[in-house]
Length: 380
Image 1 (cartoon, one colour):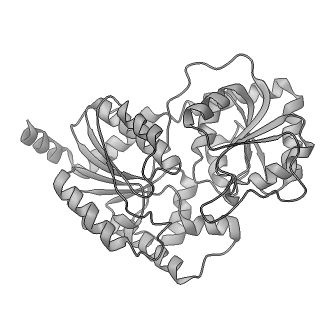
Image 2: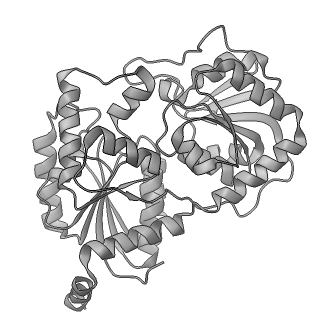
Image 3: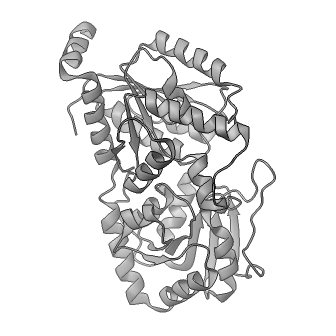
């Protein structure tokens, strides 16, 4: 990792998904090495557990909570002007060296510092994967225009997989090629010698992107208990649906649980399954692999890119094929053990230290080494 540069990074985040985990892990490493990070939330405010995560970070990491709308909740951009004014005023007050945006549309703000946009996911690519085609409502056309404008205006944009970088390029035609930086996590120092005969899944159960409908349909044919951690109903009344038939008695819906409890269950489960139709990276898969679970994944480009040779792949939306793969793995302890080891070894290549080091190099390239030196002298 680069030597500490005493940079100040203003980083936006939401609190409702994997972006929060990504942002807080990255902020912790940056703060520990000597950078100052100001995390700025958009959308729902952080809960008590999330605030506690920030409070326990050792380093210069601050939290600013706003009531600004997330772009996917405000696709027509009704809150865009207010958000731009509020964020720009904050940047003028904080005077960051780098603005690190974990959303698209804010990239088009006239920031007083170099701007980096990270493409974690987008509605158009979700729509293609889950519904086919593209949305044609005016509000989603406005959303697409705002995303494209944010990508064009940013000094650089980043994607967590080459597969998703290609998707963003195809959908929005940004002026510059995106930079590939895989997400990373802290890795478990040890794994349990014995594991429960349990198959674990996680993610929003109501979200068709996660593919849990296929898992619910496959469940009656699977000999082990299946546990699914995640919200069962969505903000607009969406609910979990199996693709056909009824879920088996061996399914246990855990609801939303803390990340700490989820990691505990990952360290205890023998198999982790992610039958997603859409997943630009899949932080939950990485955490499960690091915890020592054998992986059964849908055969989508991002998963192939990250886990080829370390997982069993099954065509998305095929409950029979998913059931067959899980049956095979439940019945074969040797194969299970081989996959558990392969997944854990592969996961070591996706560490938060490596991720932070690559972002530091990108920050340095945006600032320029000469500008960094001048900045250090001015702050001395």
